Amino acid sequence: MDVLLNEVTHTVHKYERDKSDFQTECGIHHHLSHDNLQPTSDDQLLTAKNASKCGRCFDGEGGY
Image 1 (spheres, rainbow, N blue to C red):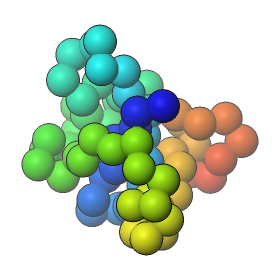
Image 2: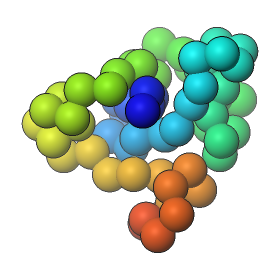
Image 3: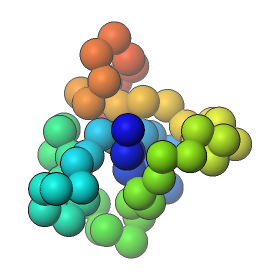
Image 4: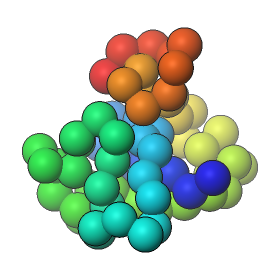
C-alpha cells in the first residue's frame, strides 16, 4: 500500500496513486503544503521516523 508521510507531524496517511495528486482519505491534502507530504511505501522509513498512523485514514489507530 502506498502512503503519504506528513513530515511535520510524522503521521502516515492513505492515498491512491490513481486519484489527484496527494489525495488522502482524511482530507489533510487540503490543509497542508505538498512540500510537507512524502509519498512512500517503505516500512523502514516509517519506523525510523517513529511515524504514527492517522486515525481517520486507518481504522483502529490513534487520532488525527
